[in-house]
Length: 132
Figure 1 (cartoon, rainbow, N blue to C red):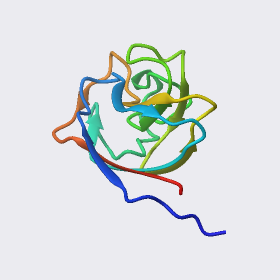
Figure 2 (figure 1 turned 120 degrees about the vertical axis):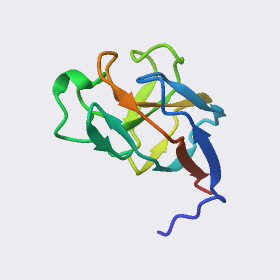
Figure 3 (figure 1 turned 180 degrees about the vertical axis):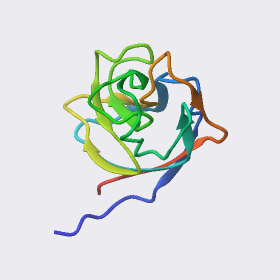
Figure 4 (figure 1 turned 90 degrees about the horizontal axis):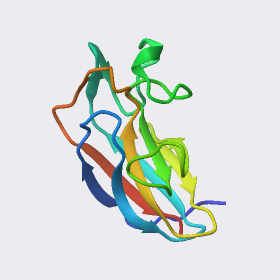
């Protein structure tokens, strides 16, 4: 079955400071399927990254160990200050994700530890559409 998507909405998000969750959408409605596409470039230490991150980075450069260093992450629910709440997922350059039973905010962050250097000279460009 072919999926129909709403017209993509553009968002522009600062990549820095490193590892900080930034609110993109105030409230994603319950049971909403989102298609998220991301563009941008930055570096973690001296390693250039795209939203997919970089697999060869040292483990200590990652804030969350299950995702590549420098990868763009999303979080449905929770707050701007915590990684232990909400549902965290990798956005990379493209993802499709569904919200849960309640409206929740959407946040994004780059997976970089507090001790790693993040060099971002441009904003992250996101386009987000909803399944119709």
